[in-house]
Image 1 (cartoon, rainbow, N blue to C red):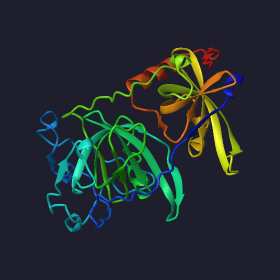
Image 2: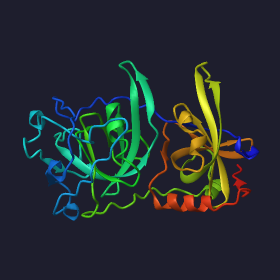
Image 3: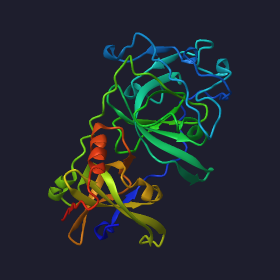
Image 4: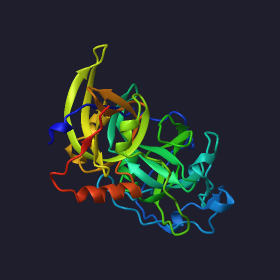
Length: 341
């Protein structure tokens, strides 16, 4: 581990909690064994613009098996008992995500490509605890949407929502979003009665969203306190440190070093929940830091990852693949220039 890599940066990923705004019928259904076939795909009434209208429904890719849950992904029973869903046809109305509101009936469905999937985390609140998985997807309009899987949905769908895979999303809940990376006012949450299915992209095209990440060398001209977005490779991860806030509350932090193909290295500091996701196992992975804050300390420039910041692990972007190819070709003793204040 390089001595230059042991420097400070910080990040705080906000703790997710179960959604409060329901966009689902009140009567739940139960998953049961069965095969997911094209016949089980809901019939969609397209509510998109003329340019988005599809002549046929997308082909459903056979469900992947999960070691955590042996039931087929999206298997459901008693559909005729779910309020708001037409019996037998189980029809859905397709929307672009930006067309959805909290007042839209629960029969909505949207198609999107998985942009990034972050590690599974645990949460605790007044109602108890559980686990959740945060992911970011982009639809045919190019919007970036945050989705969160809770508890049993993590087991059911974590193998489906892989970066680069296109899925249909339905039977979820909508709530206002506060994350910086999203381009729409709402986000979606999913649990064990939701439906997420991999679909074929033969009949429509989902383009990469325009996120405009800056190269690391550009940060030497950035002023202290500015917010920045970048895509870089995790080069070195420092050890976990425990500190106390001004009020005496315990807090965990971890520094890590990122590099890119401008031969520049930049120190980042993470805080709270993100600290535990940044282990040695992420070295060599591409991450996207969205709206991190530039900080200067001892003439060294760094990026502080605070509450408004979003971190995307291994995003399915062309630029990310370019960085991976570049990084894998480097000599072991390759040197980088540190960004100074």
